[in-house]
Amino acid sequence: MNKKKTTKVCIPSIGKNLESEIDSRFGRCKYFLLVEIQDDKIVNVKFEENIGALQGSGAGIAAAEQVSKLDADIVLTQDVGPKSKSILDQLGIEIIKDSGLIKEAIDRYINSINNN
Image 1 (spheres, helix red, strand yellow):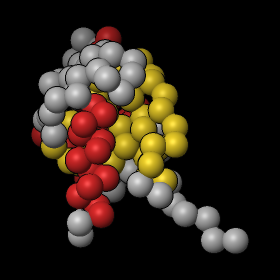
Image 2 (cartoon, rainbow, N blue to C red; image 1 turned 90 degrees about the vertical axis):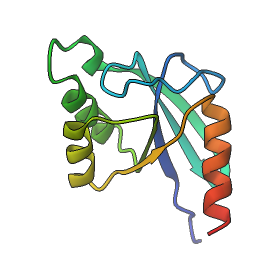
Image 3 (tube, rainbow, N blue to C red; image 1 turned 180 degrees about the vertical axis):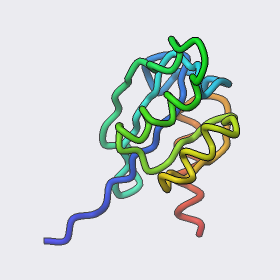
């Protein structure tokens, strides 16, 4: 049986659910929402507190390392700093910029992969 790949999208969030807004801060966001997508459908959603938010300095680096440990394929964010971007690029984690409600941004992402 051929199993479809699940794509894990990590989103900096101000809240703990899909109706939350994407946080404008990557390194200092309160939560990461990890959304698993398979066959153009959301199959799992979980949240993690961002340990980088508690850092005095190096929050973006700590956040990027946490995203890597969450096994994310994509970071969907308003913006990401140069240090975080460098780490995410090295790890092969794609960065997609968007803003607004997480659910709407995920829907736009799913539509974009279907139109390519």
